[in-house]
Image 1 (tube, rainbow, N blue to C red):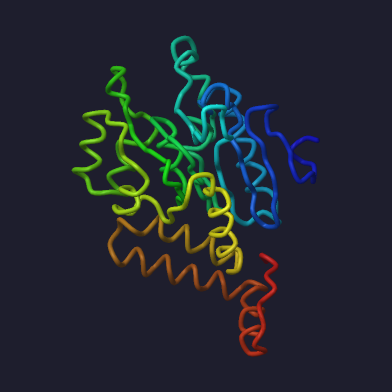
Image 2 (cartoon, rainbow, N blue to C red; image 1 turned 135 degrees about the vertical axis):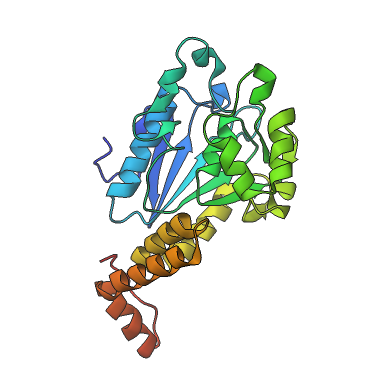
Length: 272
């Protein structure tokens, strides 16, 4: 079936990115295990198609992006396909999403990175484009582009120092070190939850399940305000928070939230 179908497992591009809806959670899996899940044209277009479906599907409230297991073990994403980069670097970008169809993508719904194994170079930059991160004890991050006379051009050089202390990010960028493990990333706040090898997707699904218990419109509005106001003066935060509250007052789910509280039951959200 194509992306407009309701199959529980829909390939966005054959054999490159799979889309599966589990309840209200959409799982996008980079599926190039023979190439360490590296990003090529099909992967970039597949991720963009998956994000399109996530945004358009009213039943999908939260997204997860992960990588297929390879014969050599778990690998989230090894970054850009260097073979393609040597002949067609622009082919790994899309008009809406930039590199991998994601790093510059405008989204409204939260996206969780479920990282098992290495997420290197562009793989780290995919993770940085997500809203929450779950990582197993085999996950490793790094931006080694300087070792190839490149720069981390897909957001790593400004997003990483927003997530972890600047000097730590600077060291990773200038040395190209590939030994920034999940435990250290969790210590500095890049990773939300740690788990055992092979459990990243299940742990991300648990986290996504917690998010879907909240009202989906309020979740999206809260995400938007955090992204827009965090680095701005307080008056911007007050303005956006006030506007967000007014928006919620005008929704059907606002009444449901109050009624469910009064009736001492779980709310049934409609996303309206």
